[in-house]
Image (cartoon, rainbow, N blue to C red; front, side, top):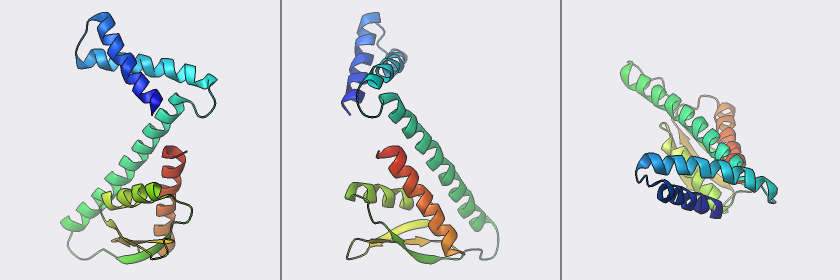
Length: 157
């Protein structure tokens, strides 16, 4: 977070240095600051600043892809006659997730059309998820596993 705030400061300094006070000047300063901090952070312990940005972009592209796929699936259900859904509740294990990670996962599941995070078990070991299209439980759990694994790996490590 400190490197991100420092990047914003570098972008503002860039605007003052060149006297360009618009969104393009801010964007140019941010990109140059990002590149500079990406190189400098490689010398510091921990993950580099540039890698974290790349991971965020990678997860965003993945989530956008599953979001579009789910929207098209629900739109097809609305447009075509008949009943193609196979709804079910899934008890999904969430061991090893922090409260923040669990909240982020539950929100990502709920944001995706056709799925809804319904509840967390009393002991905090399971998340109950309602899926509109879960004909095969193992496939649905596999998709949830991929979302959880990518979220933890690309956003929280």
